[in-house]
Length: 428
Image 1 (tube, rainbow, N blue to C red):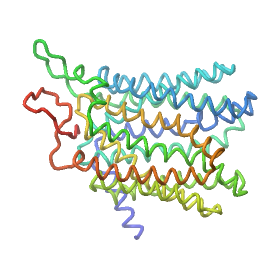
Image 2: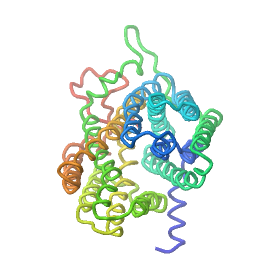
Image 3: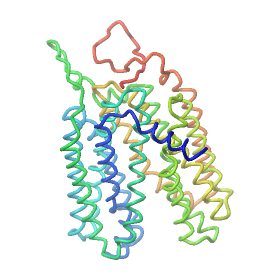
Image 4: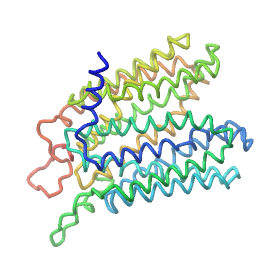
């Protein structure tokens, strides 16, 4: 493919989206460019405050646990309070937590701040995803999610490099920069992003308004969406496993920590360099096919880790599952938007976000226990099997639900008593 054709593909990928989306995209980039806390938290806890590696791991896990609560909270606020005020409030709350780490040094004080930061950071995501579904035409939603995910990874790559250089100024300086960047993100949203929550319909006497009619329990009763969440949880477990199991496996092979650093950096390099190209190739494809292919890439990439014996071979496995990541993340977000009624997009995205948060909390514990117990080969064989199971699940259980021909909302905005079993739908 020539440079000119690549340029045309890039232009086609980023064209045709509303201005509001690009302000949201910019806020994501700014936010992630200053995301230093989680990147350097374990080093700060062990080298600066003198805590054990076990305690550092516990604190990082608490961030994921906070996300389990923050995601449904953010989803409910997004639908009831509005997308824009939820984003602004949660960004500011995360900024306050980052700034608090400059002053809080006690063990359990740090743990509490990180837990609250997990709540705030995860609570903002349903409002971001719902806003994209609100403002972007249905045919372009997956592309918009892919571009926002690209901004997230581009910002994270910049933060990792800049943070490593700036760490000589001290970890507390990094936390201040994180707080400033997150505050700037909130300012961008407040000044430039319009509220996109659909207008509430007037309720008839004795009826509830649309946003009151759909509870979290109603969301979980939506069978196709519940299946999507459970399958996403499986993929999240597989996706999270390498971040814990890969350095341990490479150490078993006698490879140095610096080798692991170079290998895992491939993940960010591939996403930043090729997300737009992958998005162009996958645009307008069947979501079921894309989710199935992504699951197979996760299965093959993680499973092959058991066969790798050199840094180059480990890097090759990272490339495979990273491509799966680039396909899966925006497609899953678009599928969530498709199944959600427009007046309940926040709650649907909030429940989906819980699967990511649960995996972030569970996978590190399970992966570490498996490597210490049965061994790393069992971990990678398990990832391979789970990836295959997810691929079968997407193909068998969601083909009809994500069919693009007849979108019908699973939780209709208007009662339809003549239907005993409402069919699943796109809310976008």
